[in-house]
Picture 1 (cartoon, each protein chain N blue to C red):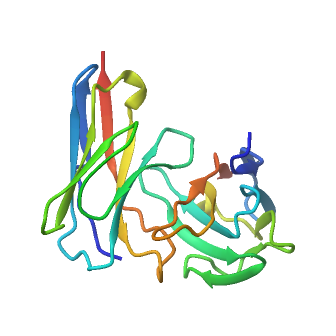
Picture 2 (cartoon, rainbow over the protein chains, first blue to last red; picture 1 turned 90 degrees about the vertical axis):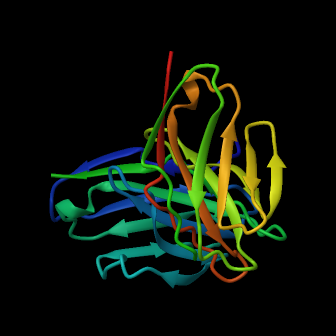
Picture 3 (cartoon, rainbow over the protein chains, first blue to last red; picture 1 turned 30 degrees about the horizontal axis):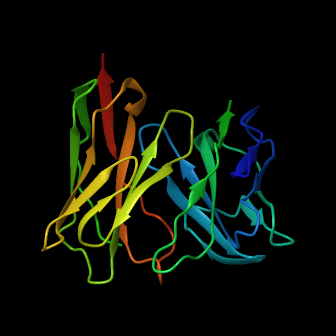
Length: 115
Length: 111
């Protein structure tokens, strides 16, 4: 399977703990995105990488959140000192620019529950 | 990106054609219209994209009138497995690459 993969699929943690999620994009896709989705809502953009460069961060991404894509391949999203409000599905997507409009391919997501 | 309005939910029966309309009154000249489908506990999946008139693929058809202020996603002969949330997105990816999702339309297909 050559789709976007995410690990873990589920994570339960206690408030105040740190968590890290991993995303492996479709190979050779140079763009990688993180989104967050809460129950009943559509995904919300968090951040975006082109290769290893993080080009934009949403205001939703507080100082407790950090994302990296060190070699322009996989990416990690870390949440420090988790809060109950961080409970959500975290989605990763990747794309390869296609004229005239690109398509983003999403992974299955990591569902986070903060107790 | 242009704001979109679509019904919160729709019900249908197996074998029927389902049409979901999306309003985007403020669509810009270089904006495209894209539809994504999302099943529970999965990421969204691209369905179809268009700029004007009609686009058809193996999954759906997309109808866009001349003024482009709305669009209709048509799913022919739905099955139970088409039960999902459908999102309409409008934007130009040359500058604004991030997708902005609304709340989508929850389609329930009944036997």
